[in-house]
Image (cartoon, rainbow, N blue to C red):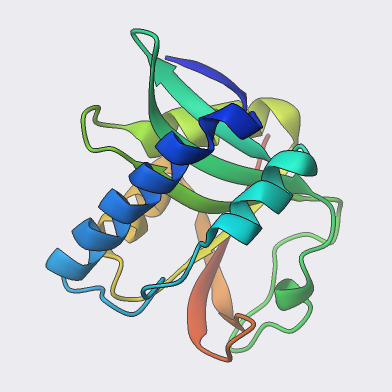
Amino acid sequence: MYIRKAEINDLLIIMSIYEKAKQFMKNNGNPTQWGADYPNEEIVVRDISDGNLYVCIENNTIVGVFAFIIGDEPTYQIIENGAWHSSMQYGTIHRIASDDSIRGISRYCFDFCREKCNYLRIDTHRDNKPMLAAIKKYGFQECGIIHVRDGSERIAFDYLVN
C-alpha cells in the first residue's frame, strides 16, 4: 500500500469512493453520519488544495481516501463526558473511506498518520460499527463526546504515540 497526497485529477475517483462509502454505511445501519451531501465536492477540493487529503494506492489504483490535518480542530474545543488525554499539538483524521476492494485501509491510514504526528485524534458516529471496531483495535482511547458542525454527536478518541 502506498499513500500520497491527493491531486485534483483524482477528484472523480475520490468522489466515487465516498459515494460507495455512504452506501456501505447506509446498508450497515449508519445512514445519517454523512447523509447525501457530505463530504461534497467543495470539501474535497478544499482538502486537496490545503494539502490535507491523501489517497491509498494498491496496484496503481486508488482504493482509499482520508483527510489528515495537523492543528486545532474547532469541533474538538468542547468535549463532554470526558477529556482528551493530552493538550499537545495533534493531527486529526477525518473522512476515511475505501472502495471496499482492500481490507484494512484504516490501519494503513492510522500508521501513516502516526508517522507524521505523535498525538492523533479521531471521531465517529456511534452507529459506525466498522470504524468503531477499527479505532478500538488500533489502540485509540475513548475520550468523550464532541459535536460536529451540524450539532450531531460523535464519539471522540485519541492516540498518543509512546
